Amino acid sequence: MYRSSTLLLAALLLARCGTSSDDVPTSAPSSSGTPAATVLAKAHDSCLDAGRLTDDDQTLIMVVRDGDDDSEVTDDQFVCVLKETQMPEAILQEVQQSGLGSGVQTKQWDGVTSTWSEDPETHTKIKVVLRVAGS
Image (cartoon, rainbow, N blue to C red; front, side, top):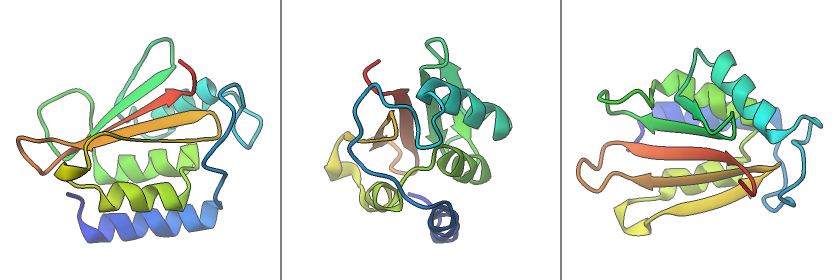
């Protein structure tokens, strides 16, 4: 899974950003008032083209720690996207505690839906998909 130092850094950055409600209506803009699609595009651009932005900026796909596909992101890019999208710390903790037996997990905040799972073959990478809620 992730290196503990990366997760600690991510938790610290999120704590500085504040947290948001886990359950937000699907049409809601982010807490900054910016539409969720714009938040995903901004996160992608601000974080050195982190992951793969698809579906007219409605989906951001990231694979953490693999190296063999265009969706791969570095630990720094992943932390940057978490900060840009203001993923609540409680959701980050769920990502950290997920394992192979957890299956696919989904949470929503500020008009963004995050889905993640651990790769059943390698157990060393995790795929995180951020989508505009309702798309």
